[in-house]
Every structure is written in C-alpha cells, then in structure tokens.
Image (cartoon, rainbow over all chains, first blue to last red; front, top):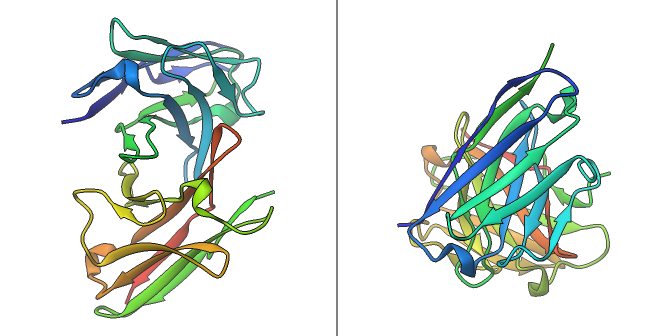
Length: 117
Length: 109
C-alpha cells in the first residue's frame, strides 16, 4: 500500500525557516517524481514544487522560488522541503504527492505550517 | 489570475447527474495535460478520483467518470449520493509542473 507521511510542520515566526519531510513506503521511491502542494486556510490547492526521480531536476512556483528548496534522499525514501524567509502568506497545510501519469497521483495527509508572530 | 477554470459551485439533487468542467485559458484541454480530478471534504486531505482524463483509481466509485468535453476536461457524477458533497479540483500537467483549478463546491440537496 502506498503511504506518504508528512512531518515537520509547526509554528514559526515570520522570517524563520522550517524543513518538512515526507516519508514514503509501499513503492519504489526512487522510481517516481515527487511534488509538494499547499493549501492556505479556506483556499484552494496550490502547486509548490517538484523533483525528478534522481533529484537532478527541480521546479518551483514563482511565489516560493529562491526561498524554498526541494530535495530527496532515495536511500531513506524521504522527500524534503526546506523553507526559508517564511511569510504569513506561507501559512498552509503542505501535502506531498507521488507523481505518475500512468498510475495516478497519491497524496499524503499533510502537515500544517503556521507563520505568525 | 486563475489559468484553470472551474465552476465555483454547483447543486445537484440526490440520485441526479452533474458535470463539472475544467478549462484552460491558453486553449483547449487535451489528453496531453493528463487531467486529474480530486475530491476534498472538510478537514481532509485531497483524494484522487480520476487520472489521465478518464481512468478511475481502484477506490473510485463507478458513478464518477472523466472525459473531454467541448475543449474542457469533465467530471460527471451519475446517481449522486449525499456523501459526494465536497470540493472537487481539477489538476493539469503543464510545463513540468501542476496547475490546479480553483475548485467546485458541490452541494447535494
């Protein structure tokens, strides 16, 4: 069974940093591209970033470019999102997701990041 | 600016049929965008329903079907159940990223 479990969320002050993790199980992690998606309170889904299967290619939404870094450790079956210079607009539930156009997208349960003083 | 358009809200009676659509401001939605449909209920994570235009996940009830319709991706619910009341999002693959529609709030009344 495919499982994605996010962790690392919490309360952080504006300007601070946080690193999210997403631990994968039930599939060969190194075979899949992975994404981060977020959802601000009461708002819709917003794509944040994606990384290819070996970590050599990454893409970011304009709103996080230069502040967030996506990475992965295939030996640990773990996806990361390093978030720096956080602002109140980054407050959201962050979801990791496994990408596949042939077998569909699988979603984690999310981790809440709150940026507030 | 929302590049992927969805109806903000729709209402359907139990047992009825409703079609939600997903348009793209750059032009027609085609299978090359691998349209996906997600369902989200309050306080829950998104749940994938449909991928690659019209393929159901193993857990997706048969009353949900995906297609292309008039240059848009479409999600049709036939024989709507009360538990189908939720927000529905479409997702398109575009330029190495994903783009989401703003979501449709489906009310079953």
